[in-house]
Length: 276
Image (cartoon, rainbow, N blue to C red):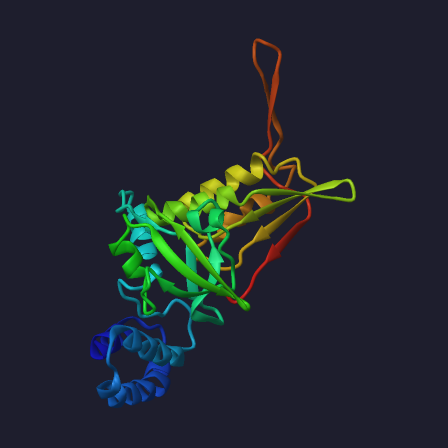
């Protein structure tokens, strides 16, 4: 498996110099340590540690034990205009960006995990009494009620719920739509949207939210923390369009009611980011 990963990096990585100087040395260390690796989770950790030597984003080794594996399949199916497989979606994701492997990094709005009150920072101790659980276990046993034991600070909590069955990428877009909030402050109304993923579905949904329910807000908080990227530069066009180039359109029906459409957002914008 390590040799196959090496072949992919050799063939596809943009810098042959980094590959020869940095990655090759790290790879040799990994090959020497392979005899000590006992399972796929340990192999994933070791390979991803080696891939860090590339000093690049979007270089990751994943298996069907990882949530990102199912997300990417769903995203690529959507990009190809095809329907993906519906899988069990609990709504919480652990590990990465400074979080421990079993620690919740983010919770998708509108999912069972969110409605039951699971929170960022919770450590998932076991799922159905299995301590070495993976996301693959959730997918394989998707019709079962999940009995989840969690540590939150000094408290031990238990959550029990059935995951929803959905294509994973659309579930992320739905979470963005469900994240919508209005915040009243000093006589002003601020809008809030959490963008969990890029891609065409997300692009269209974001534009619809900003130019729809958010258009009359006095300012907007755009939360880009965690989830997945894959956004195009054009995803932010609505914040850069000049009013002089995009006239506000008003249509009036036979009943006399006017409908206004504005194709730009020109109020103050705050963007939240983190390592995720």
